[in-house]
Image 1 (tube, helix red, strand yellow):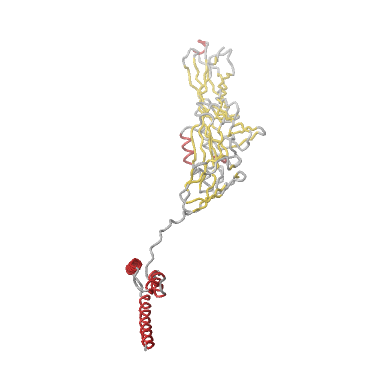
Image 2 (image 1 turned 135 degrees about the vertical axis):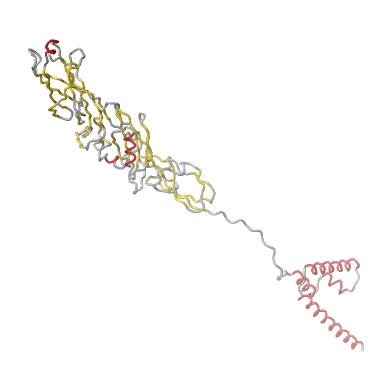
Length: 444
């Protein structure tokens, strides 16, 4: 009987345990919310604490408190498992890494010093120090800065400047220039200079006040080729430009009124030549700069002279004169260009004034039979018939007055090695000379 009751109890306890375990398993499979987990944890903790403090309960209860059963472990594990359906909190965003670009230096026909780093990697917006003349050089020039244009005549950035790095890769080219001294020796004349490119565009100009510093690009694009220096000269009043002395046989002096102004002058614009003519300049000469170097001196000797005009009257007889005798006077006129560089043209007809010797005029006779010799000498004759009053006074004089205009139609160039003569058409460079003799006695 006892055994049957005992077996019955065991079967009931087994069924009870089965349902408890089944229920626990179902509960453990239901996702627990954070609030539920907290409540369960708190509730379980309180019960356990209370049980541990009371010391009551069966031995089974005390054992389960000390060592959780498999069911409790499963329940605890399920409640503490991460919620796979919960959206995770966003992680803090990191700032993107700063972009970097490459800055490349190009010596533009020059040469960097040994070991100098010509490529720099830097962050956008930062600054780098540009190379200076200590870092790069080009023979015959000096560094004036940097530009993104390899043919720039003037720099965008100074040497050694703090350059702000752009948003993309960039290449900077060295900008070279040549500084020279323009120092022609102008005797009895003033000067004006123009620096032009082959298109005639003026890059610099101004009056010459002694030696003048000029600057031209050191590296020139193929479209430009070369810069040219032109000097215009204006002689003092009644002075004639006569020659240009130089060791460079490519230098000549050209009248502005001519059809050819030399190679440097051939690139001048017509309006600029007219402007110089209107300001009184009469001739030009110049240099190309392709073969010139930093520190070169552009110098020549340009001379002008003041002509010494001559007028001479030679009568064919001055003694044993009688009333009615005819005196033939030969008149010689010379412009006085001692180097014979100019053509002298008579302006109008020279006049011989016949006087009493006391200031009174007797007759004004035009010169006739005029011939020329050389470039500046004219000869003519005039005849006068003696009157009774001339014989009574026993005094008679003659004076000639003429106007000669000197025109530069031929330019000679004297060099250290040879003498060259270049013919040019007549220019508007004219000097008017008034020739007059002293009173010449016709009766002695």
